[in-house]
Amino acid sequence: MSVADDAPAGDILSTTAAGPAAARGGGLRVGGYIVGALFSVVSALLLTRHLGVVQFGEYVTALSLVAIVGALSDLGLTAVGVRELSMRPPAERSSLARDLLGLRITLTLAGSLAIVMLAWLAYSPTLAAGVALACVGLLLQATQDNFALPLLVGLRLGAVSALELARQLLTTVFTIVLVFAGAALVPFLGVSIPVGLIVLVATAMLVRNTRALTPTFSLNRWRRFIRPMLPYSAAVAASSVYLRVSIILVSALGTAVQLGYFSLSFRIVEVLTPVPALLAGSALPIFAHTVRDDDHDRLGYALGRVFEVALIVGAWVAVSIAVGAPLAIAIVGGSHFAPAAPVLAVQGIGLGAMFVSLVWANGLLGLGLYRQILASSVGGLVLTAALVAALVPIDGAQGAAIGTSTGEVVLAIAQCVVVVRRRPLLRPSLRVLPGVALATALGVAPLALTTVPVIVRLAISTALFAGALLFTRAYPPELLDLLPGLRARRV
Image (cartoon, rainbow, N blue to C red; front, side, top):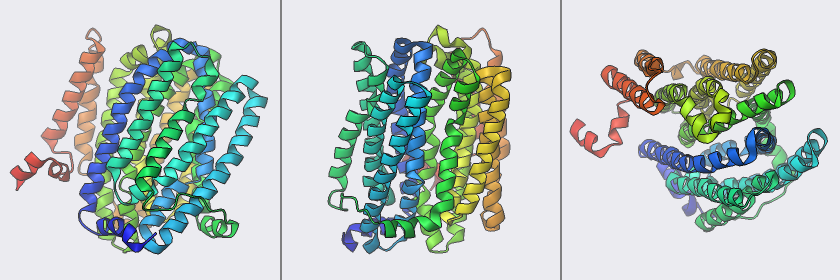
């Protein structure tokens, strides 16, 4: 790989064009994901009715087991890969990407074998077969994630967004085909295989001229790379369990029906979980590049603006889920899942907090504060597990939702505190906080309109939320610069 190949990535990260590019790209990724998620609602509502409450709980349990493997086998390699490729000289980037690919393949294969054996022993041979198929899809996705690293570092986020949208749409199409074919549980868990193959080939065609696509397997180089990031890898492991611990604990401590209710709520939240990751992760190359250049003024500015956007979007998402939960459950699950609506409303609070949490997590990653990331992740895991284990026997799925959301809120606050204590110059401005608080209070007011259809309440809620933000000017002014008409008017 030549220096020229990497020049565009380095150039844009060093210029003032990086911020607008990341903002537009982040918006494209979020917008593309939402479009895909809307299409996936169609397959979800067909799938829940096709499988029923109990089998759908098994389906989500299997996906949760595979997701744990995905997080543990990644060990933060994708995020750290973005950071390192943003900071390292061009000549080192191709070899690093190949080393990361070999390491990711090795870890994914080892984790897949272990989780299939666990599913066989703890659940059933049928579930184990489905987990095995999903693990093949996971290996394909892990490879594709590695191939896409140059696109992320070069802020070619439009291409990344197209690939992510293609994955969602293809998953929806294959799922619908299986539903109409009357398939049992296991084939649905294998949908990721054809989807993964198609997206992997498309990604390879996009990057084939900028990097080598073959993995390398060098234990010595892996050891040198992993040693300094071991705390971060352990943090990723803790986070993967943290995100799934609620499902596992409900399956162990609750009834099959409670697991079904919580699984549907969790699945809806899980579909939206990548949104905060996309929003915060799009700015990670900028965070890392400013750290390399020791430009804390630029880092503080970038962190502060992304924090403000995340706070606003997270609050709106939490409010919208609280108001629209009955409609979401009715569409996706039908009347049999109606008791899951309050569960979803509570889990929406945790999803909203995740927007803020991931901003500060990416700030910590950009600064290379791996031990601090580990401490906060383990603390969040312990707190969430303790709360869920205590509350599930008392209040079933609702108790699990309270536990997970509480853990997410505490984690968001803790990570912000850690960043500020380590780097006081990065203390964020809280100027938008009163306006966001007012917008949130007004946004949940339509819950009192019990005789009004949910869709109307949701529209009123969003209008009140947006109106309060505009009235109090509780938004970053740079957002207007992304809109050509408003930008010209400001000039």
